[in-house]
Length: 94
Image (tube, rainbow, N blue to C red; front, side):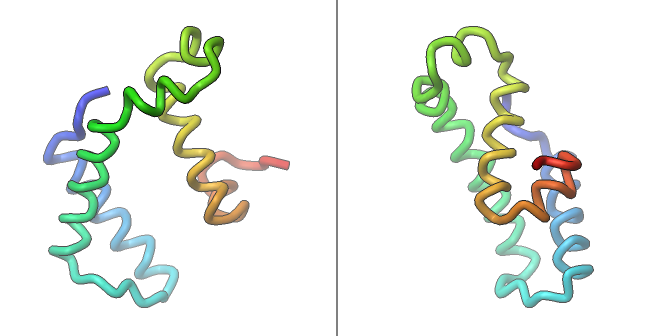
């Protein structure tokens, strides 16, 4: 999958600011630094997607689409934060 375009990164940026504002939790970074973190994360994903793909079992590597692999990665990463956050995006997971 390709890097996210400027519009997409802006959407993520606004969405995260709204999400954390609604959580009433201190963010610890300003808007500019949050945007830089989004840009860096997107670039890291781009730079490491081959490594992630190679880490998958052969069947998954060969049969999941790039979009499905990305959703898999996001679900596992979000589950590491907590089930509540995972359920927000994916619904019931237990």
